[in-house]
Length: 282
Image (cartoon, rainbow, N blue to C red; front, side, top):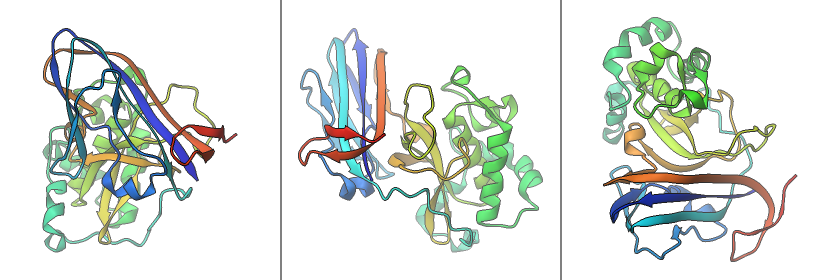
């Protein structure tokens, strides 16, 4: 299938302000692009890309005084299948894990493994290692937290979510990541696009989404504690230890978010050199 995705952010500043954004898709999805993926601004601000330690694409720019619109619109090919399932994927012994995976076993800014370790082993110590244990963690987090935009708080950690029992998608992901790490399963936080494809449309404004990946059977697998079931059309933007490594924007000064729009839709056909769809899928 083809998916048209993108965003429009309007940022207001009272002084020139350096900004780092993480609003590009992951390099692994570049081959799937049908149209160019370009970050544009309303005032042609010079911008420069670089890759961070997690291989995310970061964009540097300096916002001028006033309002700046940052936008992107692209079309990408997707296999149209739900998240792959590998129920026989094994959990590796820590001694057998690749060096580059080990950092996803330890605590981080939003994932306090030290505080959650005892609870994790109490809840999941009896579950067979591997895919079954991860699914048990997903099921637990999905049922333990109540979802709602009114519960959003940028400083909430996994430990706080566990005790408060509320949150948004990033809180679901943080708690699941932390619990997996407590059980010696490498887990990393992911952000990106997830539209209402293959499900009944949800009557809320589209937003970016957070999920997580675990390392089992020698590769990374996607899980989603917010939705619990496999979904169609994930487009990965960034991954890291937690949300601190994948912030959509990091401003070095005072910035007000004046407007925020995200779109992710299945399309039936696109022009060869533009993301503008000829017709939208029903």
